[in-house]
Image 1 (tube, helix red, strand yellow):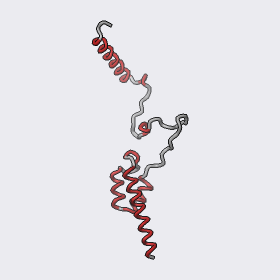
Image 2 (cartoon, one colour):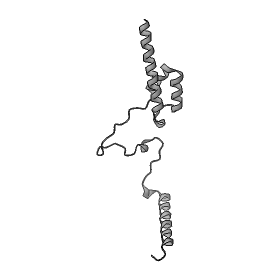
Image 3 (cartoon, helix red, strand yellow):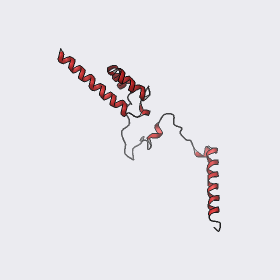
Image 4 (spheres, one colour):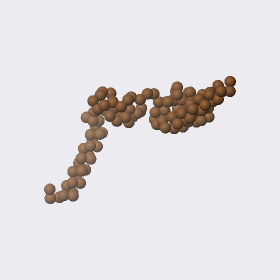
Length: 119
């Protein structure tokens, strides 16, 4: 009976250490359901239950494997997949953007003319 208790303790300790390291090394934006700091607190305070909850509800879901340059559905820039990020529409539809581009181009032309007046 003592051997069984020791084995359960070692497995629990191993699971706790694994989950602790996993929480610490997981990116803040990848944590599910709670902020990373709260997950760290849960795993630290309630080792066995917190570790199991982390594996079930907090750990990031499987990420897509890296795909080759010719495969579809591979995001070129993973920061575009973050939730809440504004996705730009067509530049032709954004009058404010076009106005700022024209103003910047005109300012650059004026600066170039001022630097080189004989051209």
